[in-house]
Amino acid sequence: MRNRSVGFTLVELLVVIAIIGSLSALLLPNYMGARERSRDSQRKSDVKQMQKAIELYRQDYNQFPLALPTPGGGAWTHATLTTSIYMNKVPSDPLGPTPYSYNPDIVNGLYNLCACMENRADQDSLVTGCTVCTNNNYNGAACPSQKCYIVTQP
Image (cartoon, rainbow, N blue to C red; front, side, top):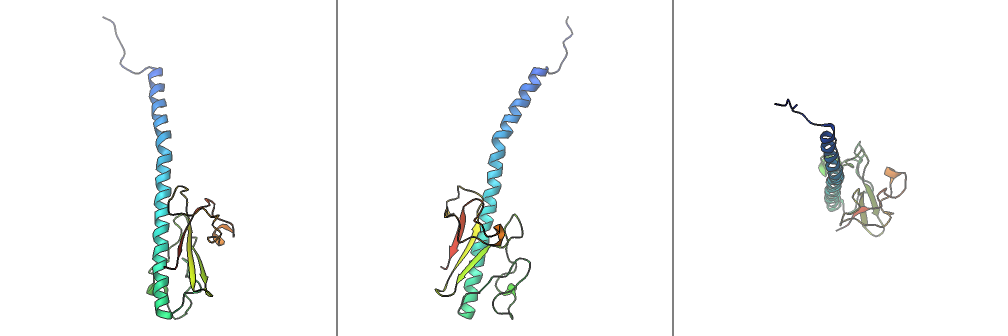
């Protein structure tokens, strides 16, 4: 009888490694896209929460706030108010402490709330060069993805 060793040859190991590598190369972009989509949905939720807080403020003072509180501090237009009256926590971008863009138009009584999106395939985003969404986040430049989620006065 022959003595056969039980094990894998080098070719078999290389084939298995190649298959695992190609599967992971196919799945990794999908996983990264899911993370972008989840951060974008968080941004949309934050902007809608801020919109509700602005509307509550408008009902109390019959005007829109001139500036929103920043995540690190700040205040609404009236100094006697604390931010916890309208928002328990001021939201910021999921990737960092960057505040969202708020542009009040006092003359016309309108405002824009804007968040820069990561996912270029998002259906709710605008591809306008994001001129409304420019702020200190990107040193006055447009959003890197060129996609904005903009909410205006309802």
